Length: 148
Image (cartoon, rainbow, N blue to C red):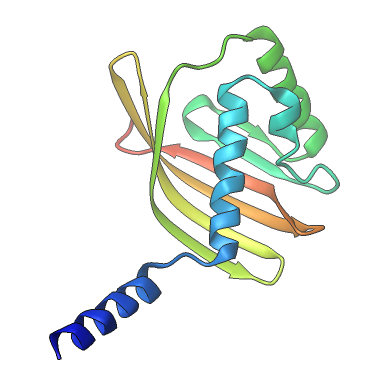
């Protein structure tokens, strides 16, 4: 009886805590986009964005805002060309809230960046579109937690 109960408990836990394939793909896209930015690799970074339509970009603690792919692309390319050294920070992402509806996804999570003994936490908000089977960013907001 204990064995049957243990098996049922394990199955229940795996169902409750399992990620869907879509959630896994979305998290992978978000991680790859951030990694490309940290590595200062414009082409890899841009490959994770939907450059075919209007997109939005807002980083509140840096007062950066753009509302078109052309504007975002130009600013990010200039930033990465001017600052070619990869950012040697470690990132941790937690507290994901992912909502998928068809070919759209809305994601909220907490990102902690550790660099030079400093820790910076931000709320990250992303809207993604599924294009030809791949999740692409359509909008992002990054805002510091705790008035940093």
